[in-house]
Length: 221
Image 1 (cartoon, rainbow, N blue to C red):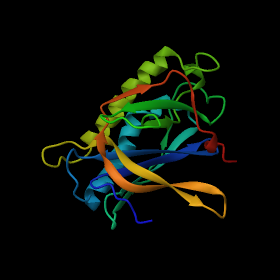
Image 2 (cartoon, helix red, strand yellow):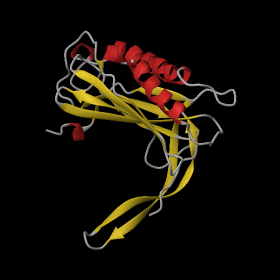
Image 3 (spheres, rainbow, N blue to C red):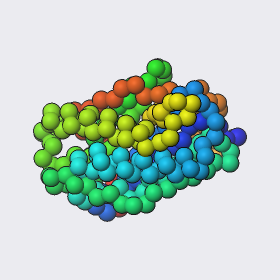
């Protein structure tokens, strides 16, 4: 299948470790209504802004064993994409100890001006300590409130760390695609493949779920 590009969109991959377990969070950023290719200067600035915004807003909500180790950015709107990377580690500075296991996540949901089958955009964050736990299934209210504030600070920090284009700030966005299912007769299954690009939608709201999120794939060893 041919590559399906998202014009003007940059992907940010924040990754690190929770103890010995890896974690990764993928986000997207774009300037409203601008589809030009990212320059190397701007794609590196995005990586640097992501690292700085995490350190300033989210590290305080991570246990000391949770570390951000890399912020990699790439222009996914160009077939000759440029890449940025910041590998200056950011350790968690949360006052509490680690949660029960590294599959537990703080589930942040995002709203965009588009509805689609399958739910809504979200991120599974390696945030939360044992002092943030209310019971066996939920975070306490203070943590939910603090994380919603912290995400506002993170998104604004990334936006403010970038140069303006056309008098506009870079915004957290969601890249939407159309998909088809292709039969794999040999392995008796269907593969979900991208067929075309729908559009870029700025995130206009966010909310942390009070219930724990989980990412079992993080239990890699």
